[in-house]
Length: 209
Image (cartoon, rainbow, N blue to C red; front, side):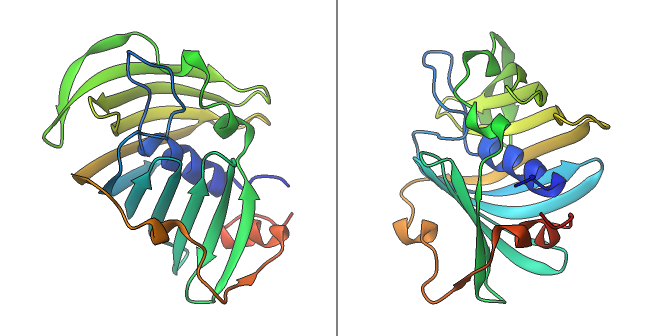
């Protein structure tokens, strides 16, 4: 299945936004060892999106409005798969992570620290990101990571494998609340109908297939 551009952008941000490897250990970006809830502000080529992020190790839930619909993303990091849930239509679509997401444990994603900064009241260390995935896609830029392993800010360029203009993506978290989260937040709602994979493109503003 071809990954729609909008979905790739959201997945990059969702997986980076929930945490990153600290200097002392190599771990999958996006799978912080602490649970938390935060408000996430994303800017893609100048267009701003605000949503809620809930994270527990191995799982993430993202909520936001897109194309006039309330959408919920449930991400299973260990299984490298996700679900786009549309509560208003009581439906969902399952999708695999694209190649760039599957390589989030690559050691070159977070390089030597560049210095310390305070983001939204939290102490962070700034890192450089530069990674090319096996399919040719590439992420370059900077990440600001707290001592708890939460990525508070991100500023990157994402080049897709098939070429085209790189996407300018920025993200920042605010109102971060670290603590246990409801495990049911990451469950598929009961009674929802599964849509075919080809429905993902149109739902994300792309082409079918």
